[in-house]
Length: 262
Length: 229
Image 1 (tube, rainbow over the protein chains, first blue to last red):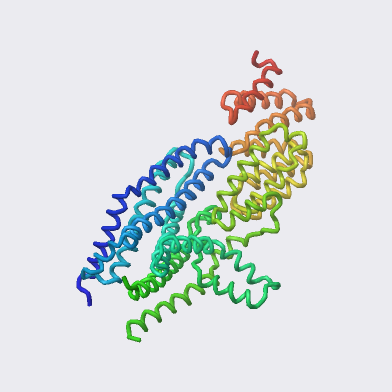
Image 2 (image 1 turned 30 degrees about the horizontal axis):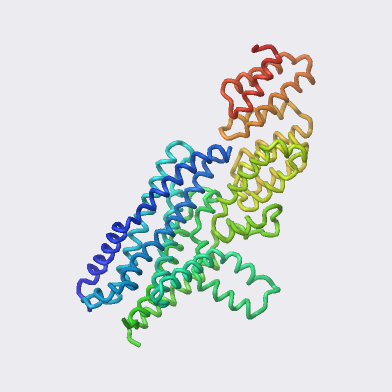
């Protein structure tokens, strides 16, 4: 049993965070803030009667896009430097297990993501103080669910890159998975359509159940029908669902990473 | 296989079964968030499709609303009597049935500007069905129903209540002024009272306009009645 495993994972996670800061990944936040502040001024003119609603929708869309970008850039930085430039070889010669290494990378990226999402939410919160939106707990749960889905994306991307051994392939597959994750609603209606053949139904059902269902985390589109606060049981369920997928993805990733020869 | 591997595999299977159950039983998701009614798309099927696959349904509903606003704002479209506004509004509420403002604004245009009274009432009823807790829609329905029955007093009463709400369509204020004038013509014995109500309303619109057009409109009315020069 590896001693101080948790400390090693945390050290790797901390290193990922430092690397991301060094590569100025958080500059993305300035673009986010600029886009949002500029956008909010335009919205006032363009969407009379629904200014608050449009502002918050634009803000959440930006948060999701920039969050996705943060995950992809962080993964690009760590993978490019460690795999493509072969610095990974130095790390794995040290007494760090491959499991700790991969988990550390995942937690590091999650840390970068959570930091980015928190700052973006603070910017949004600051702008809502101008009185356009009356915030409640639902408005906090939306980015929380968004972060969960992005953490799932991070786990999947790390795993796919590990399996694919190639950065672009991994990122392309991961992006496709992100799109498929939002398509589940349509897949279901195709499956339920009596005209769909048995073979197609089986194949689609496999995709439907095995691909991550990102629409479950899409609370931003459900914000206006919540009729009060979001059901805590639902939030708990989707959290467990995210834990499942992160666990499963990282498990596969670790297995693939252990078999890998450098 | 070691015990650890068995445990991990077993745990994965349990969680996977849990996830399938969640997707199947997701009562919150299924009950409250209707399946995407693609066949109902009237005007912008591409955007509707894009919205549903991207997970930005509410946001694209907002963009379509901005487009509808531009459509209303363009006087050229008056030549065709703004006939696209209803299909555009249908698309918006198809994407987001809980976007309440288009119900209010578009039903007002349909009812008072285009004279499509039944369509307006049907539209606002659809809004109430989707948003039963949003009381304002019932207020508008009452105003339309009374107006349709030519009960101008009750119509004026409900519109007066509606314009007290912060996010009412500015057009409604102009409509209320016209209803007061109609009442003044319909009830000669109360002519001064209703004209006074109209002048009070225009003065308020002039002092605190909810949109620039309302100020111009109020100014012209006040000049016509000799209140200002």
